[in-house]
Image (cartoon, rainbow, N blue to C red; front, side, top):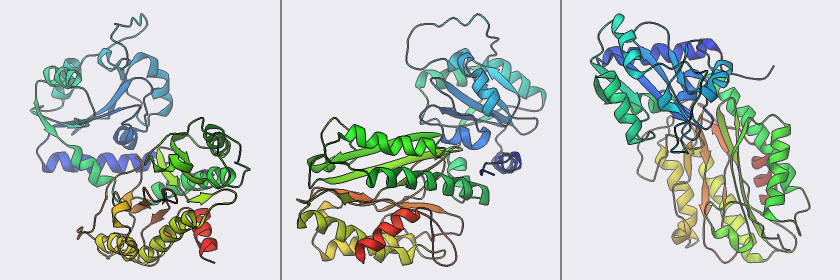
Length: 391
């Protein structure tokens, strides 16, 4: 049976949010999401809009209300764990200025929703998750409709999402399994003579066939194009000796895992080999610090020490680790000064990278679950590639 997030898990999340509301004297919370900034809305309702906006409204009492737009109604009914679905004209398609007519839609308004909440208690403070993601126009309509003090509640969702349940880890493990297969299929194909777009298509097709819900992104570059830190695949033809930089981010049941292993095709030179050598050594040196109770800075410092010893610090452009979950990159995102310690149940992804070297640019991305002992790799293919490279 494929892993998924059960209703009981969603109910636990709602209970924790209500404890937060009570503790902070907030009367209700609106959790916003859209096609791109989907992570918080998916986390509390399982709904993921397409084209349109969405939200979940939760009071201290009563059932959650999921708000969507007309085109997404059936999708919301299919995906949402909560059955109360409402339509809002303010959540329509985000990319056009025209007023779109949906003659069969039965809309509600923010003011009507506010009155429903007031039937069950006071509504003086409304928490919002996603203020940084919504437009000013939408914010003003929400503020005016609810007629309550607005409180930024992003922090509660960021905190809840940091440590993962067994169900969440299972979904991340499945996402990583799929990503591994997509990456392996591409890596082991004959790539010389293909365009980057064709090569990327091999990985995506294999991942979709294995059950990928979505390909969040695929970074792809060959040869000189590896120097683009987050470059998209292009029509460039892959040539003999090219370094290949490919990061495949796969989503499964709302959870995203990314895998990436530096490699080169054909007769590549020593400069290219050197880049891969250093990245693999840096990962090996950092891994022992991925353990509960260890300050996060220890991993970062270990990785950076390899670059420093090789005189490569100027090619190291960002921290080598970040959290993963409903977003490809989420908290924690430690640097060399982060005193916070790893905790059991955290899920993280390495992002060990060097950019601008003569032999090419690249990174290693491998997911891990933090435990009391050795961290569990979510990407056994990437781990095997590193071991074989060293051997």
